[in-house]
Length: 191
Image (tube, rainbow, N blue to C red; front, side, top):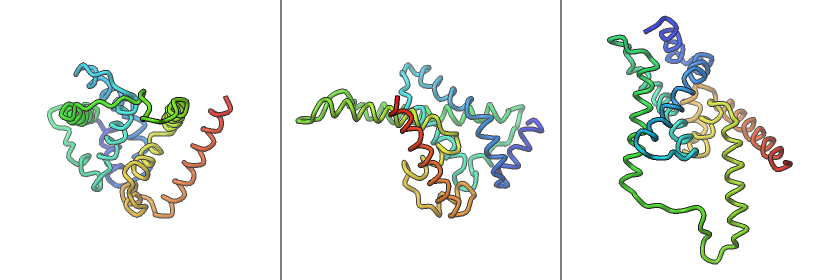
């Protein structure tokens, strides 16, 4: 393990926000491309939303239980932090693909519900795509926050514990992110 990796890990495990932000910034590209590559290796064309969901889940799993997973890294036998993170991302992706394989139920978004207005279905699909684009424009930390708050529906107290911030900071961050999303969506709608 390099000194830089050691310092970054130590900072994260001590709950330093700057260290976590640096960690996410440094390894987000690696994690994202590892997930995408795993899909490709298993002959599955990845959908952007699946890759994004797994990307978010990866960082949430690292944060969960006071960095329990990150504490498991030992750096033995020349294993770098980047290599270990790749292994974690690949395992997460394979587990996801196995679950998908077992369900084997495909539902298409292109078929409107019986009796629904086709233009309405198209409009809803376009709005979903705009929202996805907007979410992708957020920073990795903001996307993790969105995942915890809205997708997983965690209470503010639990989000504060996971992110190592105060409950008031959770409310502030939620407001800031929603304002940013509204502003970006207004710009997209103006085009």
